[in-house]
Length: 451
Image (cartoon, rainbow, N blue to C red; front, top):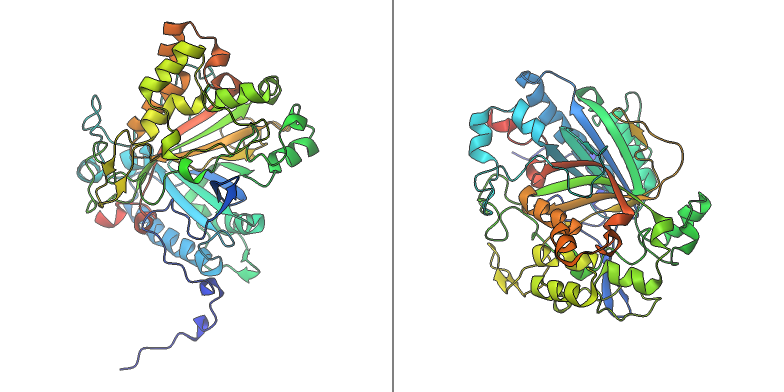
């Protein structure tokens, strides 16, 4: 019998450039690269938005949870049938907080399937752990408890805004001018924040000066972030599936056959940046506080080499501190974010020493702290900052890295001033939360199909 021909999809513009969706959510098909004086840099999507939410139905309402899982899958498919999975379309990542797994699912299910840490001192703990306060965090830091988090990325801001409208706002909505029929899931959620921002193309300086943000006039032309320099070095971002729970040995109990294989631990935070204080330092002083004291790049270089051979490991870092009484931001954590020896992954990939396996997807913001929030006051005055999104093999691994960013042991041992601990003194974190970013196939309410 001949299968029914679907005339509604004879002309499918979303497949103009065919894309095989990756198994992970965090890999971004179609991202291009450019050379900055022979240093490869990824051209990441220009516009970003994060939407956080809690579920708007009772924790024991399993019937609605099952329906929600189906409806979200249908909604995401509708969006991606209009906007292709590439920078010129849209990327959507859906992550889940610990509260979702604790309150919506039975312990018998999560005990069996949740990724567990195998790092010394945290063996057997969920690799999704509650976030904690770090030594240099302010007293009024908010540790959030959202159940679900969406991260949207596109070269076109309208794609993101139309998608947010279609998913979360009731009434008639359109995707690229096409009526959205099944995208609305806002009745299932209570949105707690909408966080917008941008990355690259000189935007920090352009937007900062347009908004008359103090210190913006000192941002080097072409800077990707408010603090200058480039954040998307190809060799400074994890490639392929390296951030996943199962890829590198020694972090979790996951294997390539596990339910959450191709998933990762994700951290989300909002960080305000003191531009005036940062740009009181000379270009040379900013360089060494961002990287390390042996850097010799000229003042105008915004993309210093980040190749594996440039890595600084713990012994070298400690020697730098002894010699220069200063530690750079990158070298604070590189011995934890890069493999310390030549390594073979669970998939047989050969990694040379110094290959980075932690993935950043951070982006600039001028919101104070968010565009919309139900849990915190939002100020009208623009504030330069970063919405930090980072992916790695476990929450425990992120905590180790973040503690090194404060370097309290080095500060005490070598009597360092706060201004000589990377650039942490210039940052004020206002909100934090850890999430689990499941594999793409399980991004719509993971584990629900097993109930």
